[in-house]
Image (tube, rainbow, N blue to C red; front, side, top):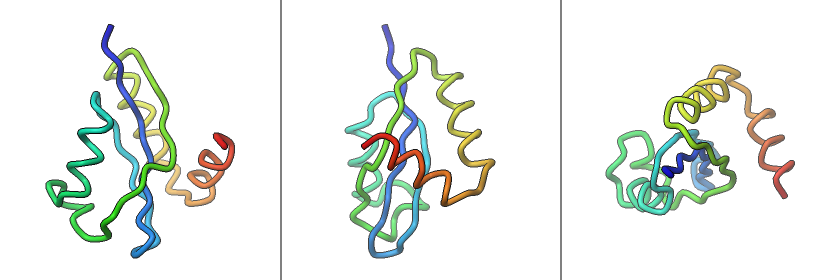
Length: 84
């Protein structure tokens, strides 16, 4: 059964968060830190702060967009803190 992730990365040097979705979380994190992703090319190293697991790419993508549409740093930090 496929597994899909919604994840939040943080760049300490830029003090920015990045929200994304993927099916291979470790590989995707490596992509972000190797400069293969345009937005995250600067700000390395990116650290994984939070993730959610879904059984469908479409549901994971919908959740990613839901988080992004809020445009809220407070909401992202709430998600991270609630997972601790």
